Image 1 (cartoon, rainbow, N blue to C red):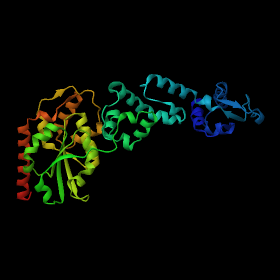
Image 2: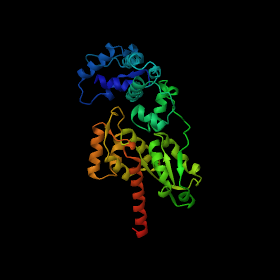
Image 3: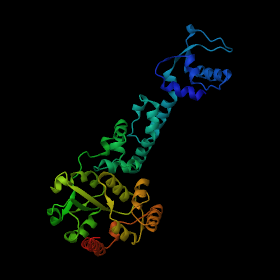
Image 4: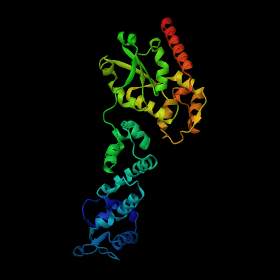
Length: 350
């Protein structure tokens, strides 16, 4: 019961309180000796100071009818916890603001502050700018945290926002244009996004033979912020409709980038290319990447059960397959064969 009273007192607005208020907080099954013991503990710990002029109740042993709440004493444990955390966290993290905020805010933010501490301890402050989704993923494993879940507010509160170099102005997209596809002013423009530069240059020579309006070099996370500017950069008008396929490294970060794009513009995995990637030799060495369970679950839903098992096992074993594992010629042949199959299906009316 003592803990119940403490919980209520922390959110109680006034510094004065009646005995009757405590009676409303007490469990109906509580006996008076139990109630008295909890109240006496609050008095002994100097959380409550009796108001003598209000008298006592008529029970034995008696209890004062009114009290003053010592807010400073009540908050002392949490203040000690904050002080202790300040000694343990990265020196750039400042926790002073939490002395003025509700204890619930401290409890809510603490797991994220711990992750920011881990990031700074392991990597230090970044030397170059990054988009909010990229920095979010690397900090806490959630690409939406900074922009949509209060991450920026927390980072500002603990004094590290500026040093994390989160860019508010995304880089323009880098892409090659298939002029015939764009010139036909189709109802829907299809685009292939690739994560890495090597893959971009491997595909570029055959772009004119593919059904894509553009081949977009994603440059890792940069594409997530830059994709909003595609219609304007391409000159097709903001009302144009787009379909995106994405091909990245088969690792946690590659899947997280795809997942962020999927949520933002409906991008789907370039399934045939990933199937070709699954036939390549896996590598090790990226065990420290953040894991996004939602990204994995949604990604593997595009594949057969056997392929889902293969991807899950690969990631669980901390293995990965980079895009470059597919030889350039084999990559081009796979895309050309797929384009030919689609033309045949279209020609047959399938």
